[in-house]
Image 1 (cartoon, one colour):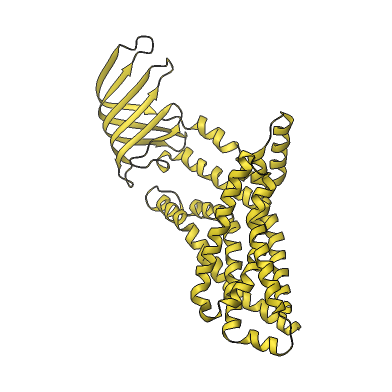
Image 2 (spheres, one colour; image 1 turned 90 degrees about the vertical axis):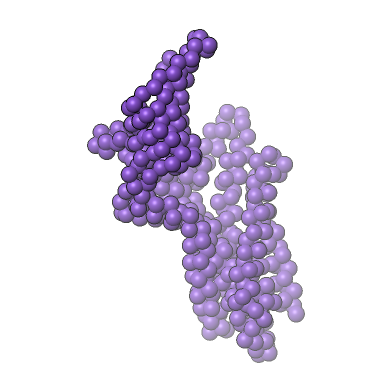
Length: 366
C-alpha cells in the first residue's frame, strides 16, 4: 500500500507544476507586457522591474495554485484510468479509497499552507508592489502617461495627450485641465508637450508649446479669457496624492491582524463591515479551493480516461469558471446582506466539495 501511495503522489507532481506554469504565465502575461514596457520605453532599470515582478507574483499564485492542483488530479488519475491501472488496482482487491485519501491529505496540507500564504505573504507583496510603483512614478511621471487616456494622478490637474513618443517623452495634441487656487478653472490646449523631470529634486513639470489657455472667472462666469502662448511650463505636483496612495493600505493589502483591526473599528462605530468580512472570508475560501478541486477532480479524472490529456485542461477551465462565477455571485450577495458574508463566500467550495464527495462515494462503492 505504501508503494501505491507514493506512486500516486509522484503522478501528481508533474501535472501540478505543468498547470502551475501555464496558468501563472497566462495570468501574468499582461503584467509581463507592462513591465517590459517600463524597461524599453520608460527607462526604468531592469532590477527595479524585476522587483516589481517578484512582488506581484504571490498575488497571482493564490489563484493559480488551486487551478494547478485541479489539473494534476484530472491528468494523473485520467492517465491511470487510460492505462487501465485503475482496473488492475481494483482487480487486486484494493479499494479505490486507498488511492483517494492520500490525495485528499495533500490537498488539505496545501490548503492550510495557502491560507497562511494568502494572509501573510500575498498582502505584503501586493502592498510592496504598489509602494515601489509609486516610488517610480514619483521620480518619473512618464510611467503613468498613456495616449488617449485622461490621467488624474497629479494634484489639481487632469492631463490627456492624443499621441506620445515613448522614447523621447514628447506628447502631441495635449489637453490640460487645471484648477487654480482662486477656484477659476483653466483649460490648456497645446500642439506639443514634453515632460521635464529632475530626479534629484524629485520635481516634475510639463513644458507646452504652441497653445492656448482658456480661463473662466469664478466670480464672474460670463468673463472668458483666451491667451495664446508659444511656450508654457506647469509644475506637476504628484507628491501629495502619491503620499496618501502609498501609505494607505487597501483591504487586499492588509494582513489578517490589520484586517481584523479594521473590522473592529468599523463595528465600534456601529456600522456593519459586510465588504470587509467578504474580503476576509475570501482569503480562506481561496485557500481551501485546492481541497474542493481535488474532491471533484479525482472522480472526474477517472471518468475522462479516454482523452485525459486533451480534455483535462478543458475541464479545468470549465470548473474554474464555475467556481469563480459562484464566488462573484457570493461576493455580491454578501456585500448587499442577502446572505451572511461567510456563507456567501464559501458557496463555491461547498458546492464543488459536495458534488465531489458524492462522486467519490459512488465511485468507491462501485
